[in-house]
Image (cartoon, rainbow, N blue to C red; front, side, top):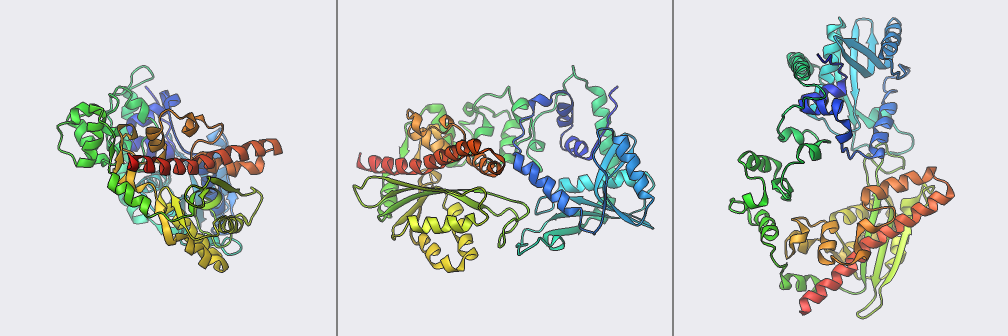
Length: 499
């Protein structure tokens, strides 16, 4: 018999999927979590900041021996009224640490802190589990609350934590969930009694693999390893619910989907890959795109990072902060391609101002600004224009003729089977230039995608001078490829129109 020792995170994962808990226990090496180091660090920073929400507090330090944390908590509980952070409790092998416990003469209040800017159902499961433990231990739980980040808070000077955080009283909802918590714990215990390390549970994939985080479970690759490739889950932009409906009907491989009634967009991906169809190119649409371009041509791409807790005045939580751009310029027809770039100093607290000024200096003439996914660059420029009023007019003028090279691929005016239904540049570029190693992101020495770029830049502050220089070169090469790719797409557009 497996004695289950639950924590609040294990309870929540087990509730989402029983097999996930089994995998965590017996096959953790199969976990393919894509949570970045900065995401984890940001969560820790938010938790630390929130500890001061109610003033002075006493903290229960983490200890691998949970009994020590519980004993420390019991001692601190005697000193009511007080605020205890990471207060730890156990009831029937169910353990929890409460982020913030308000310990009053007539009872306690639970505050669960999340770095998200919105409420999610899984957070209510988390709080309900804590309420279950404390109420069964005999505590009068007066309130059970969710604390999350206020996305509308803009930093000016020191962070005002009472404005930065929003407190949602979830007490009544949490009370209504107590019977479910008890049932879920019992079911999870029964489930784990049936399966040990040598007996893997047969649990089929389903919507639980994608909820509540709208991303695939950490064990998705393991649980789908026997599916044919490609399969229904590789059909881009088809709703998850539709994919599972087809899967349960036994329509899994692309061959299974050929006769299925689907929209033309989804059908096209399937037919192109199964039948190995030739590229589809709408020359009229490509020609119209080319005719919208006016010299000089500025092929540009930004790199950015986010802080949950804003560190710079005028910014808000999760704002994309631009630290780098690459720019390829074609001044006039027949001109050689010129390259310019900017990469902020990781120690520069005014890097966004310097980013904006450098960009304006590098694009002095009116022309066409060419990007891939205009929403990103356009939004960043508008944010910079709002932050720096003296640069507003010049920055917004850059948007007068903004052209998005993603459009023909998103609209399938240009499509090949190698794009696999995607219009991401990481799919489009190797599809159009399959034999050019210079255009292969996998061949880059250090940075291969946007997340790595952000992580690398954020890590540079703690690097040696030698490591920092290596990181800078990796960032410059990566971002340079993004805009060189735009130049190559432009050349391909001209080539196919002339054929």
